[in-house]
Image 1 (cartoon, rainbow over the protein chains, first blue to last red):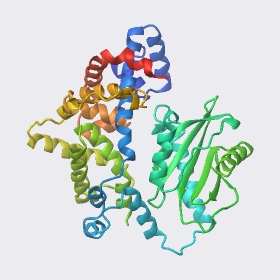
Image 2 (cartoon, rainbow over the protein chains, first blue to last red; image 1 turned 135 degrees about the horizontal axis):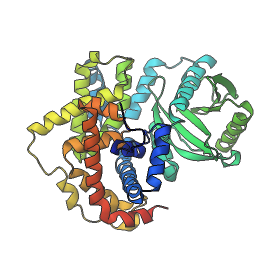
Image 3 (cartoon, chains in turn brown, blue; image 1 turned 180 degrees about the vertical axis):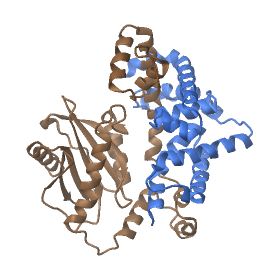
Image 4 (spheres, rainbow over the protein chains, first blue to last red; image 1 turned 60 degrees about the vertical axis):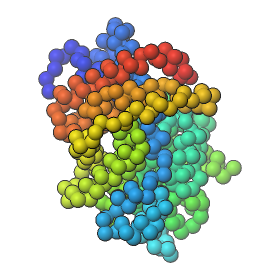
Amino acid sequence: MSREEHAVTEADLHAYTDGLLEPDRLTLVEAYLAGQPAEAERLRAYQRIGRLLHQAYDPVLGEPVPAALIAGALRPRARRWLQAAAAAALFGLGGLLGWTLHPPGAVPRAEAIARVLVHPAAVAHAVYSPEVRHPVEVGAEQEAHLTAWLTKRLGAEVRAPGLQSEGYALVGGRLLPGEDGRPAAQFMYQDGSGRRLTLYLRTGRWDSTATAFRYAETDGSGTFYWVDGPLGYALTGPADRAVLLRAAQAVHHQLNP
Amino acid sequence: MDHFTRRLALHVPRLRRYARALAGNGVEADDLVQDCLERAWRHARQWREAEDMRPWLFAILHNVFVSGVRHRVRGPRFAALEEIPEPVAEGDSRPEGAAALRDLERALGGLRDEQREVLLLVALEGLSYEETAAVLDIPLGTVMSRLYRAREQLRRRLDGGEAMGLRRIK
C-alpha cells in the first residue's frame, strides 16, 4: 500500500482508534491530533462507542449457552445423545469433553500438568500481554463481574489475587479455551513501567490436591506453576526467576490465607 | 471428541455476542448462531486446523445473516427496545449507565446492516480490517468507508448524551 509519507489519512485515524497503527505512523498521528482538537474529540467519541459496545454486549459471553446451541456445536450424529443431557450449559460440555479425554482414574503426571498448564499459559501470555488495545476481555474496573463470570465458566471459585505488594496492578482478565477443551482463565497485571504478568488458571484432574512450585522457561518468558485444590495455576512473565517467585508466593499466600 | 468439535464449542459464546449485537434481540441472534453452527458442520472440511476458526465462523454467520435478511420481512427488530420504559437509574452499576447503553443499542439498530456488520467486527470483535474484508468478502476500501459512515452516524446520534456520559466515567 502506498501512502503519502506525511499526510494523515482517514484510515490512519480509524487505525489509531482501533490500536492497529504501526509505531512510526502512530507518532505521526499523535502529532497531527495535538494540533487538531476537533479531530481528537471525534476519535474520543469513536473510542467511547467501542467501550459502549463492550459494555452492552460482553455480558452475553457470561450467559449460559442454550442447550440447542450446544447440540448444534456437536457432530450431527452425536446430537441425539447430547440432547439427552440438554440442560447442560456449555461449561458442562467442557467437563464432558474433559472426561472423554481423561477418563476417571487417569492420573496426569508432572509432565501432563506442565502440558496443560505451562505451554498454554506461555502461549496465552505471548499472545495477549503485548496487546495495546484489547489486552483483556473484562477490565479490572468490573472485577466482581469478571471473577463471578470466570467462576461460573471454570466451575471452581476463581479470585483475582492482588499483586500491589509487588508493584503490579490488575488490568483484567479473559476466558480461554484450555488444552483439552475445558475453559481456562487468564488474569493480567501490569507494573508502572508497562511490564506485564499473567496468571493462567484452569481446573483439571490433578493427581494431588496441592503441588510444590515448579519453574519452566520458554522463549524468554518464565512460568511458575502449581496445583492448589481444584485449580492449577501458572504465573508467567519476563524470565526473572526471583521476581516471578515473589509474585507467585504472593498469589499463593492470598489464595491460602 | 475431535478437535473441530472442541474448537467450535469454545467459539459459541463469541458468536452469540456478535449475533446479539447484529440482530438486536436474543431469540433471533441464537437462531443465527444455530444456523451458523449447522453450516459450519456441513462445511467442516473447508476448515483446516492451521486456520484461525473465528474469521471462518464469522464469515459463515455473515452468510446466514445476509440470506436471512433477504427473506425476512423487515420486522420490529429493534423497535422492541424503544418500548422498554426508562429504568430507574439507581439499580444500574454499569459505568456508562443504562441510558447510554440503550441509546447505543437504538443507534446501532438505525445503521444499515452492512455498516453495522463492519463496525461490530472491528470495534466489538477486534478483527483487523483485512480480516473484516475477508469475512464479508468486500474490498478493504469498502471496509474503511463503511466503518467511517457507521462511526460518524453513531457519533452524531450519541452526541446529545456525550457530555453526560463522559462525566459518568470515574
